Image 1 (cartoon, rainbow, N blue to C red):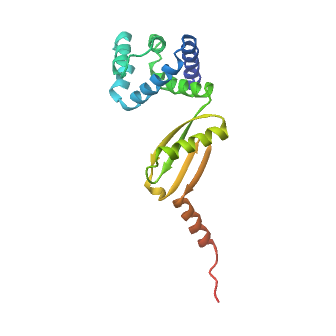
Image 2: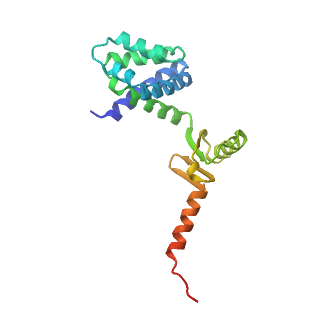
Image 3: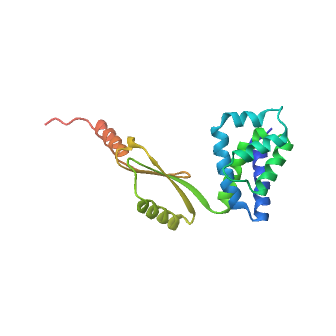
Length: 184
């Protein structure tokens, strides 16, 4: 059984169904929340995998754990997945749907690592510049990583810009270590 193939087919069905109903952006937000909840909540994961619980109780558990009521497209999808006994692939389906949604709407995820918190102005300037250069809408996630000492590390897809003090020091150490010592 190919987990990726099955999850992508179900995700495409959810994307098409929710787009047809005009709920695709709402479903995207809800799927992000459910995927995070599913990843963090081990009892929920075990309950969904349980062959003892009926489908209606599993759907009810997912709907009640969500902070807001789920839209019709997503509840119909979850019901379909559970009726076909594919609950073990639900997490993969969520991630496949998020990837497909981002692809269809030209959205890219990016991470900005800094040694100290940066202001919203810096983040907004960086986001607008990246969007201007790439043509994509960018979701920028800021993360604090004191180990980089200063500067920043930016990662988007397979692009990495490492302008951190830590990496510059490492390059300097490497270069100084490779040069033979001169004697006068």
